[in-house]
Image 1 (cartoon, rainbow, N blue to C red):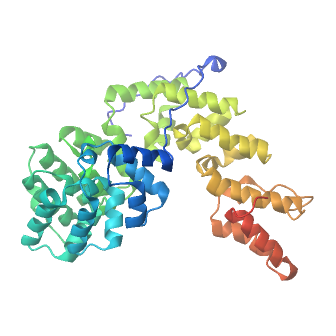
Image 2: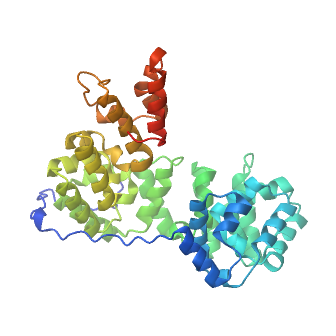
Image 3: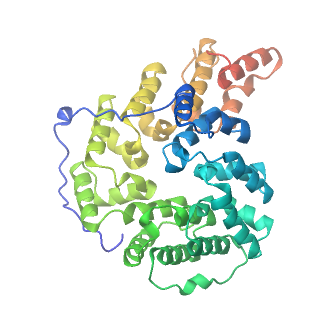
Length: 424
């Protein structure tokens, strides 16, 4: 445990008056249908529409709508820039449709840039420096947001640094001698430190181009990095970067307050940090959100001890919305008749997609039970054997075992149920 953690009191009282906790506020969720998104497009008179993304880039309607919402509120969206000119410019520099699709998924605002006055000069500059087509397409496909940097000098340095990170056989870097200075220099230096520690390219590039402050500054970054290393996180993993982000945003005073809060709930300091190692994103949660989460689980029939066991094993449970937890738990407990204890033993099931994973598999199980094909008198199998396995393992265990002789028709029916072509 890192040295700056201040230990809380040992006599941690249990949280009382659970039934008096305030009802959780439902998160305000907004979504647009295809029609409403199209209406926004027409009002803005913007040629960058959902149908354009679907037809020109082959995106699904759902993905196209998501991308459209991310850019229609930007200033560029009102300038009437032509996305076709951007696509044509990229293709003229050797970018394939696959490259372009990847770029737009990551940085959809690129389609709203002025191709001639903003994007073309940057590509010409890189080409004049000797950048080959393969280098351009690889680097800009992996870090397209650098194309949004307006200052030429900053754009050049970021491009060079991304190239340095991507270069597999590079043994040294001119950026290694960067001293403390501008925010840009600090970010480049700190990302280089992480690279030298073994943080992989796929995790470095998002840090380099994000607006998050985790890689800015010097002392705060070094202190936070020291904490993460001392806690035993492996640099090659996503959790290392996630822990760095979470701790960077919390002061030592806030960390102490968090520890004291969880002690009042019955968790020891050691247990809190073990939970943090499993899911760093739970620590910054507000006390209100945690209490609302607790109320939701207790309202579903979990005891305090079962809730504590659930969270210590799978702290991600605290991140799930109360509404989704209720929907999933009620389906599994009331709809399928698995006991609450089964969820405590298999907490990861609460994170599975209900429509795409849980319901299709459970429909197969119900179909088999109705035919008396599961154990004695249609006995319900264990929750883990049904949900905590790959699709391939599930199909082998409950569907393909019937692929013999007259059972081929049954297999076809079960596959239809599993794929959603038929309800059980």
